[in-house]
Image (cartoon, rainbow, N blue to C red; front, side, top):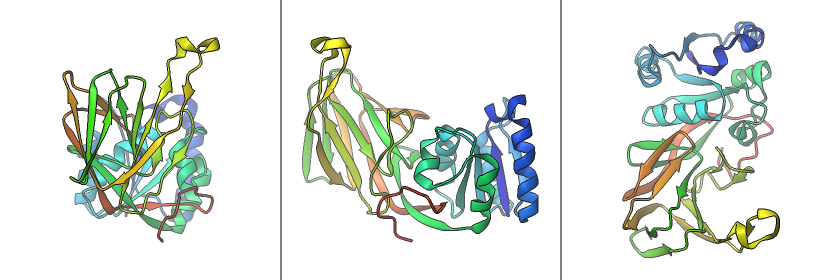
Length: 261
């Protein structure tokens, strides 16, 4: 049984013709199912959990990267598959998963080609892409696998903890291994923009670490971490990996790295 979750923005009149074509294609392929639309009166978590309770085995996000990331967080604890029909031509998750835009994604959904990916968890929040540290100059410490620590004391350091990769809100698609059972931690120093011509920041050599479990702490003020662009968590917090934690539909032109299928 399929369940299609429409994000609020996709309900704008300008998308109606494209949605009509998509829904007709789903019927032609025999994979039409229950449709629910996000609104101020309907909670996404309640809608999706109710659909799973009533037998939905494939949950499909219809919208953009934030729609998809929101559904990852909701369905990760359940044994169901996640699909994606993107309506944003710049969607990074669509690029990574090999999903075409709009109506064309229906054929990929119908083929039911799944891959099992690791899923990250920070507090009660699940994520597929990454956690990005919003640094405020506070001393930051990351204890990895309870065996070694990474220290970041420079407010110009860019710190990212990747599962699939740096996707939502990133300037470019940066993929990591989403099936190796580990998080990729990147610490990248930057030179202050005011010290460079034309106000550009310059990236220096990055440091890369791998871990399954990361305890993040800060001295003084709390540091905020952005989770796939849909939620924030403050320090102290723990980021961990759940190996093979989510089943996702993928297309033939996916860009995932080293995925076990």
